[in-house]
Amino acid sequence: MSLISASSVPVSSPRRWQWLPVPNTWKYHALLAAVGLCVLGPLGGLAASYMNFSIGFYVSGQVLAGILGSTVTFGYGADGKHGANYIQTIAASVAQMSAMAVVLQAMVWLGVPQPAVWKVMLYLTCIGMFGVGVGMLLTPILVDRMQLPYPSGLAVANILRALTDPVLLRRSVATLGSGMASGFIGGICSAKVAFLGKVGLSTSTFGAGMIVGARIGIPTIVAGMTGVALRPFFVSIGWLQPSDPPRKITFLIGLGLILGASLVDISLILWEAVRRLRSSMQRTPAPAPVAEIEPWKRTNLGRLVVWVMLWGAGIVLTGTYVMGVPLGFMLFALALVVVLVLVTGISTGMTDSTPISSAFVVTVLLLATLGLRDPAIGMIAATVLLVSCGVAADMQQDRSTGWRLGTNRTLQFRYQVAGILVGALMAVIYARLFMTAYPVLALDQTAMTADQQPGAWVSAMTYKFVGALRSLTDDKPYQRTAIWIGVGLGCAVQIVRLVLKANPAYRRYVAAKRSGYALDFALDAVLLPSPYAYSFGTFFPWQTSAWFASGGAGSSLYNTWNARRGRRAGGAAALPSDMSPTSLVGGGLIAGDALAALTLGLIGLAHTLLSGPTP
Image (tube, rainbow, N blue to C red; front, top):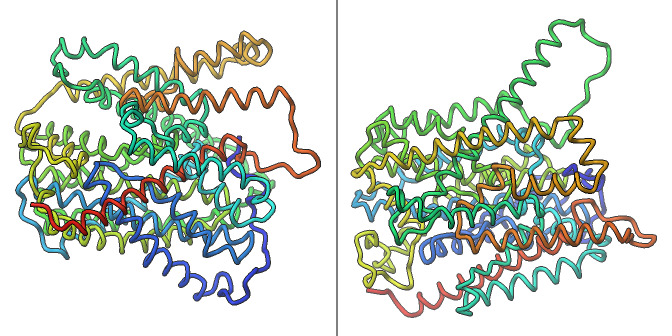
């Protein structure tokens, strides 16, 4: 299914409110930028940094910023979806960078002297700009060619279309609204009801599963339960301690699975490019016209390459001469960005999960193989991967939304760049604000006993970073072995799947026989699932995978039942293909859960601020 529908082609629509700035004028872009940079971005960044400090994860800002941004651009009619997309792009970029305040917290835990504010801002800005460029370079592969679902990107596109187009609004408001209400209630209940928290209820995870379907959802629970089954074996060979969860080692295998499958897919893409180049060189030029790239999708590849090279040089210079990291480690981290941005981008596109903390840990492990033993140096070098993978995945989510809406890709790039600049400043501000008001955040929890752990400020992401960095003084070769096992399995499984799916006899059998369809489904879901989908189950507890799989299975069952009934909307024009009831409900669940997280985060922050600094 193509991600873009006929309704995505920009069509001029009259403004509902004539006092609004004329579209595509400097006043128009100033309005959108001001809303994103001064209101929605800092608000989302405040929530993201608070969640990282208090819990250890944060909710992506795209959905929230899309909802709130559409209220500003509603007066532009159906074309308002593009303006709202620009707002959510810049606001989500600010929030993404603000969440990186945990980098400064990790430095404090490690005993690294706090660099001057200008140094941190300069370093983070260079990394963010580089990550945006790399993400944009990979967009043609992940968004245009592979057409990954990007559940949050799809949710934002549906929300913006529904809230800015009266026809779509009437057709979808009940479905979308019920999903948002359910997501909000579920998010509040999972945080406040002990039983629901214990079973890991996540309405956004369930909603993401509804968007991607059973063939992507079910493999995650298969992976989760496989990890549980293999846990005694991992303990017996010393890869896990008896009290460790399976994902402490399986996430490394999962990263290898994504990397191995990516190597196969990229090799095929490069081979196809070489084959076409050779073919074009061997034959005389044909007079047939070349298909013209749609104006909204055009980018200047040459400028983009120069952008990446310049900001990459900026990372090397600031990392080496400003932050004090040896040149070799900086160059290695920079080269690793391209690989792990692809891995995290595929994971985000398939499952709506961006494993940036896993990318950080893998970087630390690989740096250890090069002889790195200084945790402080490892922290600064691995930050290149942490920030780059985060902003690149955010970039690709935004591009997937823009693909569905037909939003100008170059303008969207510029909005995200502006968000990086402000977000780098906000990361430093929020880090200083929280750690000054709450000194407990500066205490190294990795050195605390269980009864000393602070209850209100868990900081799980920082805990993971510092724990990995402290392992530099205690190298564990089996962790690298786990990654390479994953790479081998990912390559093998992807090759077998590609060969089997391309076999004409197999394709005829699947198309003609009900048993063939059942076999194909069983292969995709259980017996030989995609390494990309399977890997998601290695990153999280099996309960989380179960919610994701439940959403996918329920969505596919409904869609199959609905198709068999042959139900059609009488007389009215059909909704775009990616605005099915299940995708609308799934997107609503994601949005509602994000609103619940923001509400709880702001309430918690207000409570702690009013209560005064903790000792």
